[in-house]
Image 1 (cartoon, rainbow, N blue to C red):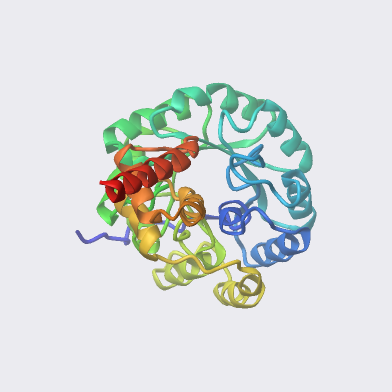
Image 2 (cartoon, rainbow, N blue to C red):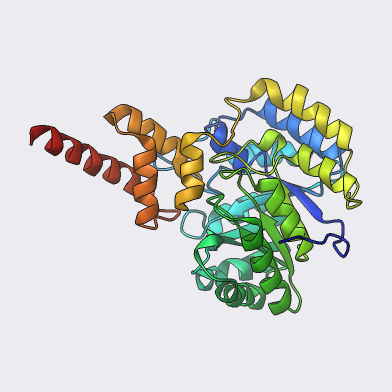
Amino acid sequence: MIFDLSQARPPVVVDTTLRDGSHAHRHQYTQEEVRAIAQLLDEAGVHALEVSHGDGLGGSSIQYGFSRVSEMELIRTVRETVKRAKVAALLLPGIGTRKELKEAVEAGIQIVRIATQCTEADISQQHFGMAKELGLEAVGFLMMSHMRSPEFLAEQAQLMEEYGADVVYIVDSAGAMLPQDAYQRVKALKSALTRARVGFHAHNNLGLAIGNTLAALAAGADWVDGTLRGYGAGAGNAATEVLAAVLDKAGLNPGLDVFKLLDGAEYVMGPILHFQPYPDRDSIAIGYAGVYSTFLLHAKRIGRELGVDPMAILLELGRRQAVAGQEDWILRVALELKEKEVEVVAD
């Protein structure tokens, strides 16, 4: 399938290094790191910066991992640093509550991105209602969108639009989509929504984050996401600096300073990376099996502790269609696989 970009428009670009990148950084960002990244992105012309724990507001916990610095402090740091860019935060109903959302507004966010499993848009109604009451720009995130058809996702997006969403995203949480999957899902939302714009959020587990983002733009996506150096869960995200260069070559640059982003990715982001995400053996397994990208580091850690192959854990999680919020399954699956290994040896 050839994707025609001739009718595409320059997109709104949101950088989520300070949220999705928190997963890769094991939620250990310091205020100094956040300030440097925010200043770079602001000066480079990025529309908005997403800042929060990797699992959204209220995510700092024993289940998801504790933040080194309170996310409210990080939000305040970013708001004090930027001169033009908007400040956003992610909220997953059931993890973040009205309390955290109100605190985030007081700390300085202007956009909230409300994320649900792609089958559960109906649980977000009160959160969109509160977002609008608080004067926020409200964005809907349909996570794990590879798991359902374009037609089904369009119906879920219509619910979010009805609740007040200004933008609704197709989110490839597992990095499992091929370009035609991204195109068809974005196209379905563009046809179904009457007011809300459409966004696309990519992960790179199959090495297709940039390609899928371009396919989404060909289908009419209005907003797209990236992270510096692709720093994010699983094999990471579409790299903001690469995205900027590609958009510029395609005549779709919304005002990004390509070379400032290239320098920033190299000299600001590079020195603080815990590791460089890329499609390695286990992260490819995530995309292949359709498993939530945030499961990767947990599966590697638990697999190492129990002597179980992380890829086997991820493939079994994919077979069971595990989704966000079911991180406890990782340990359970690993223990079951370990027990089967012991039984085989005993036999």
